[in-house]
Image (cartoon, rainbow, N blue to C red; front, side, top):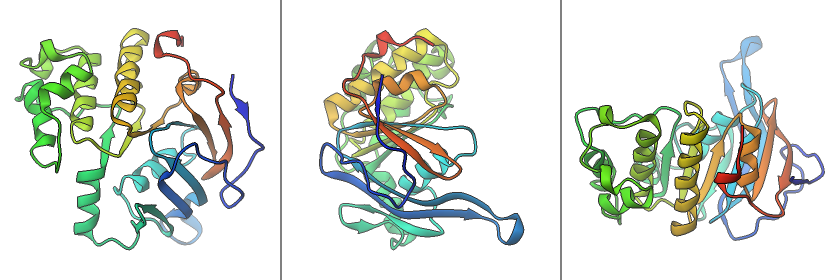
Length: 252
């Protein structure tokens, strides 16, 4: 079980990361709406995320997990505070620079696969590699997630777990520095969920990407280097796992 650090909220001392930071989060705030009806989704979050680590975000619905992921990935802009990548402020980037950051540095994986039905698995992956700076061949990305033999199949010919692995291959084919996953196993049963997690862990191991997963499944936290517990728009506590287990050891 994780060894929990002292409970903390954004703005207090940060738990040291095991490697140089891939992303630095500084006083990050996000407010939706205004006046009495305003929703404070993030309330001043401070966080250092290291290159090559696996981080799991846990917390109830509405606690701010997905909002944080969207801001880290440049899909949304903060109300206050900043995210810093390679010394560059995401908040200060114009739309063109932010698009380049999403294209070149970030891979996204969501609960639903968002594959193009009329394209094969390989062609779906190629959509990402065609716009990437230094991509891996689509066939190599599919082999990395165990789908080399399914490259010519269309999404309708693939199981849910296989479709999610195509989505992972599409994300990692760009060789992203940061891989952001929002409930990647939420629509999957145990067996296919474990297969999906094995593909994500292998991508982290082989490419050195920062892997960050939002989930409601507390058992998945045992895969992580660090587990961040969210509540009411802030960090409640951070736990560091003394060792990580393999996805095959999970049960839920």
